[in-house]
Every structure is written in C-alpha cells, then in structure tokens.
Length: 196
Image 1 (cartoon, rainbow, N blue to C red):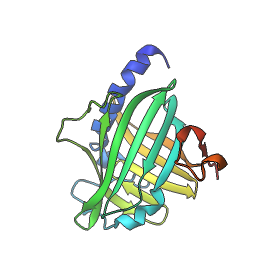
Image 2 (image 1 turned 60 degrees about the vertical axis):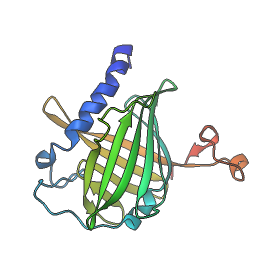
Image 3 (image 1 turned 180 degrees about the horizontal axis):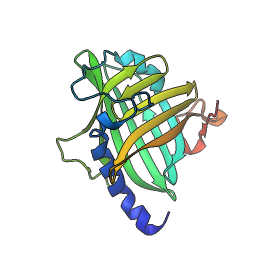
C-alpha cells in the first residue's frame, strides 16, 4: 500500500463506518450481513449466546494485520478491542461493546487513531442492532460473526462507498499461547494463530 493510500485508510474506514447503517434495505436478504428494514422488530437474543466469540483472534486484511480480543460475557455485556496495523505500525483502534437493548442486543463501537483521538464525536457510537442469531452466526445490521470452527471465525462488515455496496471480510484465527507462556501472562508476540 502506498503512502497516499495509507493516509487515506483511516478516512476510508471512517466513511465506511458511517455508511454501514445506511444500506440496510439494499443488501441481499440471504447474505451473511443480513439486514432488515428500519421498521422491523429487534431479534431477541442473550449475551450468553455470544460466548463463543470470546478470545484473542488475529488475521490479515486490507493490506495489513489485525487482532481482535473479546472478553467473556460478564455483568450482562461483552467488551472487545480491535487493532489494525500496517508495516508494524498501528493505523487505528476500535473499542467495542455488546450490550442488552430491550430483549435484544446492540453492538456499539468507537474508532481511535494511534494517539487515541476518537474519530466519532464524544457522545457518538456506531451502532449495530442484532438481526439474526443462531449456534454459529451472530448477525448485527451491517456486521456478522460466523463461527467456522472452534479456532476460526469470519467477520463480515457491509460497506458502501460511492454508491457501491460491498463487504470487508476478516478471517480470524484464535491465538494460543506458546508452551513457554502457558504458565505466564499472555504475550501476543509469542502467540501463534490456530488454523483449525
């Protein structure tokens, strides 16, 4: 990726995030990033149904590397962190929560640059209401988690740029500690993604 593309990546991702919630009625009804019209009822779901998302995940996408970490359900909510890096330099972070919303769930996220300056206004979040949940798929409106197996998860994010609807796919592999780290605190630089 060139320097000019690198400088445009945060802006592009911010625009993508802003558009995610606006394309609900335009997505194919049976795609992974299933979407519903704004007038539809929220899908019932409980935070415990998402416990398989918990863990430390890594992968490659958008010309760089990422890691995503989710804490297990606690106090009725889950909290996650996403970090994207290119050429061993952080490009941006995300802080995510999945919280109850009536009898349904809502995924909320905020973006930050490498200096932790927020992209969204202080009181704003990018919100994804739950629209589908089963044993291996958790679909929020614009963002879907699909369990492939215990150690592989696909995250699909619906995008819209210049009136084109697309998807970003993140293939996530669960990170396991090396033998040397099994009895010590986890260190990402000693961890290896599990492929199966």
